[in-house]
Image (cartoon, rainbow, N blue to C red; front, top):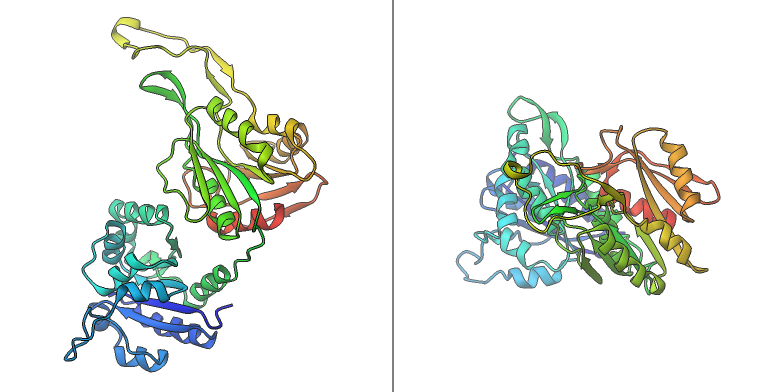
Amino acid sequence: MLQGKHIILGITGGIAAYKSVQILRLLRKAGAEVQVVITPAGKEFITPVTLSSLSGKPVISEFFTANTGVWNSHVDLGLWADAMVIAPATASSLAKMANGVADNMLITTYLSAKCQVFAAPAMDLDMYSHPSTQRNLRTLEQDGVILIEPADGYLASGLVGKGRMEEPEQIVKVLAEHMATPRDLEGKKILITAGPTHENIDPVRFIGNYSSGKMGYSLAARCAERGAEVWLVSGPVSRTTPAGNVHRIDVTSAREMHDACVELFPGMDAAIMCAAVADYAPAECADSKIKRESTGEITLRLVPNPDIAAKLGTMKREGQKLIGFALETNNEHAHAIDKLRRKNLDFIVLNSLRNPKAGFGVDTNQVTIISADGEEHDFPAKDKNIVATDIIDVTL
């Protein structure tokens, strides 16, 4: 799948740079044309001579070629590449990427890239877990960078923990799988809901849940990559709209999401109901902030919100597909089957809050996909971007 592809291999200044040589060899063996862009610090770990010999191209590190004044155009590189992979990606380089600090050739190339960018973080465990690094990783993920999660293992510091760069074979496999993305949804119109809903108590307080929107946004991104035109009805989340043909409609409450979906669904080929919609809303919303000092104890009366998936199930015409989600805490399988039948779904995606690798606030998910005819597909825990691909492969 990499035959003839143009790949930028970015190398930063970390001890894991020695693994970049193997990444380069594997990419070349797969038939890719590779241009290495290395930071000045990266050259302290691996020499340009080695990289140039393996790539068959001069290694780019500076804005100008020494002695000749030849300008290395990051813009041209960004247009040339079919994919860019930065491995290793140090904490420093990740921070520069997240904040647009264009002080070296690698970062300016990243900022100019029109292609999908991958990054394989590599650093000591304390650096990886530090809030600033995690914040930068979240920013990059929201910007559309595919992060190849580091592994647990022995680190250069002598400690053992998470931060060890993923092995070259796995990194190249992720690239190959992405480059093999089919355009099998070309011409399809798909409605996707994502994130939580907020049900107002007063102008400053609400009932909500912990949904981050990651699963729904991953589904929107993967559908767009495969050629679909996507309408993403999003609850209140701090996420960047996925690249491609994605129309984003921002809503706050369950009723707003319901109204948007009911309006859009007749024109869709499929709908994926991924949002964590609040089942209940306060019966009344105060016009002004409720003051504890003057109000004292309060009682909230909650009323049911409209069931969006069930409503679309009554509207579904022949040829349309409707996919729902079931996030359960007990009797998971039975509850999922009940929802599947009761809401006239074609598929339901089951995950459990009892599984620490599934649910809200984590980057992974572990799902079982159940069809209306009783067929089941069980998957191990995976990154939500990969889970999105599994869901699309089975349901669409």
